[in-house]
Length: 191
Image: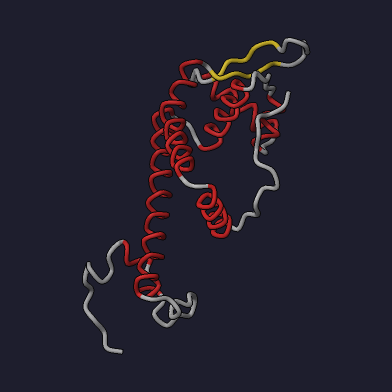
């Protein structure tokens, strides 16, 4: 095949998700069975998925950067928000279990979050040897105003779908993530 000169139209940002551009010999993706319209729709879906992922990453990075947090710090804060909403007492051990990190790493994380004013430690109401961990009101509001608002937009978008459309989206996302479907929907945490 003759070499062609690069053109921004030929290799546009969106074209980089088109198997006709990246895999014209269909070595990885069989796209010969699709009409041009079907293939264009699949590419639009891939472009939309990339746009969602990039927006999600940008929002997460913006929030973490503004608050001087890393991803594990943010996961800890989201856990503390959920526990607060469910009126649950959180100990360092519970947080360690949730995050899947060692007790030493949890201690460092809690020291860092406390020094930044994101959490407070208090005596446990029933166990004199333990402390409970809670998110400060200021940090709770800040996380809610950034990550929480984005989650609310995703939730509203899901609500606007029909039950059948939600099942299609669920199946698609599970297929692309390689994750099996949960057997039961997540519910409020029990005490």
